[in-house]
Amino acid sequence: MSFTGTIEDFTADPYSVYRAMNSDAPLTPVGPTDYVVTDPALILEIFEDHQTYTSVHNLEGQVPVCDEARAILAGTLFYRSALFNEPPPKHTAFRKTFIRPFTPAAVDKLAPTIRALAVDMCADLGTRTGFDVMRELAFPLPITIISDMIGIPTEDRAQVKQWNDLWLALQLAPLPPEAQVQAAEAVRVYEEYVRRLIQETVAQHRPCLLLEMVDAIGGSGAVHDVDDIIVAIRVMIAAGHETTSGLIGNAVARLIDTGRWAELADNPTAVPDFIEETMAADPAVQSAPRSVERDTEIRGVTVAAGARLHLAIGAFGALAGSDNGTADPEANGHRHIGFGHGIHRCMGSHLGRTEARIALEVLLAAVPAAPRFDDAAPPQRVPGGFVFRCFSSLPICW
Image 1 (spheres, one colour):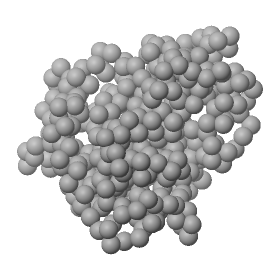
Image 2 (cartoon, helix red, strand yellow; image 1 turned 90 degrees about the vertical axis):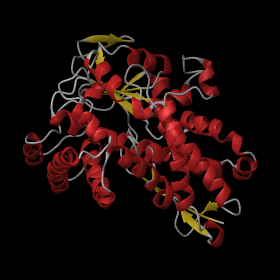
Image 3 (tube, one colour; image 1 turned 90 degrees about the horizontal axis):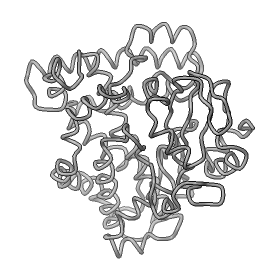
Image 4 (cartoon, one colour; image 1 turned 60 degrees about the vertical axis):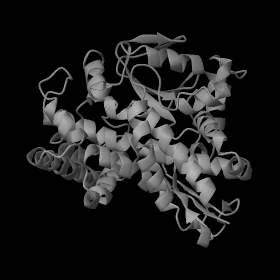
């Protein structure tokens, strides 16, 4: 049965949609060659079979693009695969080469810097009666950290964030043709900026991840040229802040919705477990795409080569261990796939967890009383489809 709801239904409550989908079939058609996969065990199975279900086409866009925008994008790296998404051995070599800044040891050394930034962003809350969690904490904290790691100058970060948003919108949102053309042109300018930044970084020999990547060209890390770096950096910037920003906002909203603010404020040692709970119950990334390499039968359904499967990460937590889910029952004990699963699992997961934990700890300590949502300015969700579940604004007051 095809999905007959609306994007508004999905934005309001994706988990009811997943349950309805899964009660009919583990694969739900959402387009001529697109399916949403909701069965928890099947989701894990597909994640683990990277030979049949590939990530190579993940960055090619998930919505139709008009001819004018496509012509602009043809002269860019928009359709070039990221080394993150390649199968082994390219993927393995790239990941091994650049995992160092994202290891638990490296992130733990970075934790005091993350905390100092969060404390500064929340410093005046004792004299205020309101705060926009997204605008004043959840957005700026992760983008600052990942920009520092990559080597993006402070004065350029707001513009890079705008370019990143347009690049993502072009992939995920059904934009009108004029907006597609503008976004495609922004992709071109964005790439030119990163190319210049790489040149400046090398000339000045500024220590950062960009310089490490340039130094790796021609080595064993699968980096062949500067184009590989541009594509990789664009993914790192997006993955390095979008997921964490969404996680912070969803965790704060969940605390208020469940009436547990005072409980965690009195017991901050429970924050890490609450972060895992949020990742299981309301993940910021709701799905991950995989393309079918060859005609394949999936649970009695013949899926043609080239079809795209949207693995419903949000459905995993909602359905695993339930009557209409078949994966490990311990999934409801905070086992989740919020950072993906299999060989392409997010290598920045420890950084994301650490940023979210520290942001929540600092906010719980800084807000003088249990907050509520601001009736005069209710929370706003990012519009879109089956990928991100995040707030664009989250005003709270006390």
